[in-house]
Length: 80
Image (cartoon, rainbow, N blue to C red; front, top):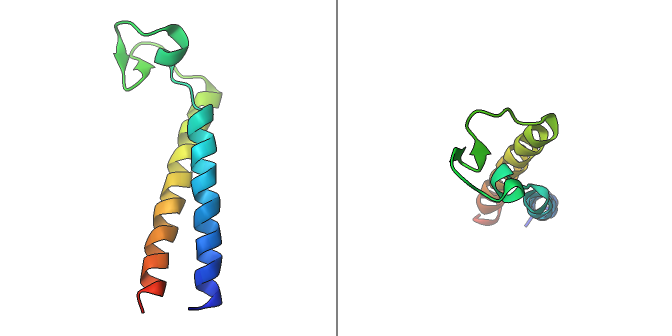
């Protein structure tokens, strides 16, 4: 077991915590407006997203990608 493996485990833990925090802070328009017709994937079809919600969506995507990549690298390193 190498030092790099432990660094990746720490990064993976940080990504997991960050993903949880980002998902908790993410409120879809359906949750905010009480639901209704015209909702696709939690967003209104005809309305545009605010810049903050777009940023949070992208942040969640990058955090999830980082978590998956570090999990894969941990599996490769500790499988030896």
